[in-house]
Length: 433
Image (tube, rainbow, N blue to C red; front, side, top):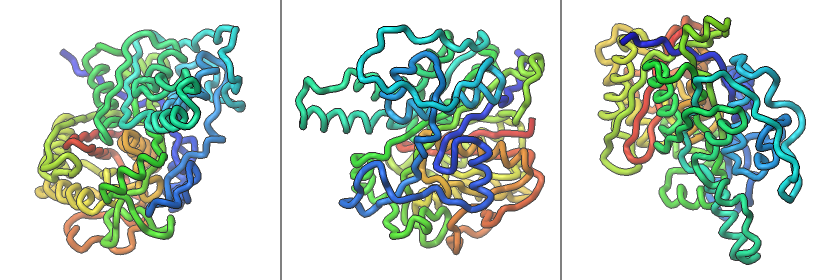
């Protein structure tokens, strides 16, 4: 059976650096940090008081199905829906702009008039979305409201808002996608796995095109309480100094919010409709293995990277940049560097390694998709973005080329990594289209 070429024809991004892929890229190149003091709640009782927050004023929706419900959904649903709309616009798969000025309806009662009909997409499509913790803020808020105001004050939107599948479902319902919708919950590897599964579905001929990516927004007290108990959050006093991927003084991650969704398409289908190709997904692998539920195994991460390279039929020295998971955690960064060192041990040319976490924080299920957006922009602009806040590289990371300043160079292929709790690893190879 012929293995179809899977190309990226649409990109939608919302993150602490902005609400477009261009804003993300400009922030990466100019060294702008989206890490700011927390405003979602009062962080006074926590040691970690910063986050990579999205500007909600930029997340707007035009008329369409679910207009009433969107505003009442958890933030991860809104961000995923916004990014998906942007991706469909960018890919030319919707006839009219999805994301326009004006927020979703704000009425407090169920509307009597039906929603407008779905904005039609071509047949043969699907939605594959990665979500890790999903509606955790809605769960927390729902419990507090019930305890403080009584069970009769519980919102009827509570259950739909907390369901992990609701982001994929909202995308499918709003855009009239009537075939497959799949939600993948692989912790911080979820979004990367969703992209890989979508790629496989198109390769096999099961699907002609798909929306795929990841979304997360869990900037809420219970998140900080849980991660502080695990001692994985940075405790630095200045948001300009944290997180510090690969730095010898790194002390943990910073919570981030993001969604990144892409239109993936069979190349023949894309060319037939004259679509602009941003890049091609040529390799994917995912595996399992770790010494504990929260750590990263260098050995198994290396196996995953090697599997993605093998799937793409390329050698390590064909990779022009590794977009690392690296979030500024002591053990995690070290394990990933050791994995890269292992994979590239026999390569004539060592691939440069970068991390965008210093700009945007750790966005859980959106980590891999946000890295993919950065990789596609790096390929387009022939530039490897720098690792922000890396002042002194950990001296144990010898033999690995970690990028500290923007590097203008030919970028033909990138390796994108994501790792999650439970020993889950996922890697993608994206190539110039």
